Image 1 (cartoon, rainbow, N blue to C red):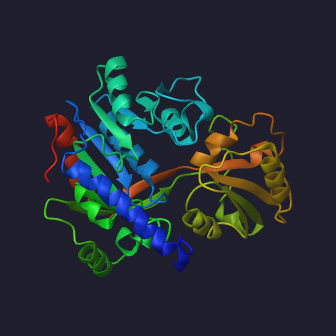
Image 2: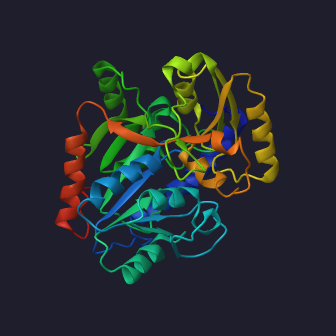
Length: 364
């Protein structure tokens, strides 16, 4: 999803870039101190503001490492109403820890899910409360320079590569492209599964990674639709090929880039209507009424509301949604896959780093 730009914003992006450059210089020259921890810390982040797929990649790491290690994820908990450090529990809601942390906690109840705007304090609290933790994943922590992670994974969406972008507010970058050198691994996310070897080589050359960096391509995968309010049961096959011409879908999204999901749905339905909200939108009662009316207006005999995992977490806060609308609300689970058979190499890099358990394993 490309951002509409006004040339009038360009001077402000220069000022913003200068401020972030000064801040990074102070950390790079150690005039501002960064904290290291005697435990593997993996940072997952990006240079652009949203839309690169951090959550499914963080979940991939949690699933990979959870087979062998005690894993904790530390997030900021964007748009939560609570303050300070929080650890997710069975009673936690969106207001307590935020939508994405709650989504990950429900998907991986065996791991420690914590939120804290101050990541240094958050790591210390995790180690105090959960001293058996083997590895901590920092969700969206690339700009949090107060921590020196042991391993940094930088994401950039295929359709809006960071090297072709500009600083906020003229573009989407939160800091200069030169800072991608802090990453150990660069992932080009949301890549088409059919991307050619020639196109991959062009992008690799354009990114011009450092010798110590590894670069891989990942693609989004979609799972079978699950009902939002029915204990995440599969329910009926809403994308039955035989019933495609009789199926209508209302896509409701509050994410940075809903177009890939919309494209996925267009190929599976005869009628598609879309309502888009801003990223992390907190639904209100009037939003639910608007959504219900749009769903009812679908002309198809079989009609459904389809949303994202993150939006499903927030929609569940509305327990009073009545039938038949309630049973028509589904979400699409999202995952990732590595292209070009790179999964084994990526997995080995991550697992080897955690097994070595060094204080700081970065090469820079």
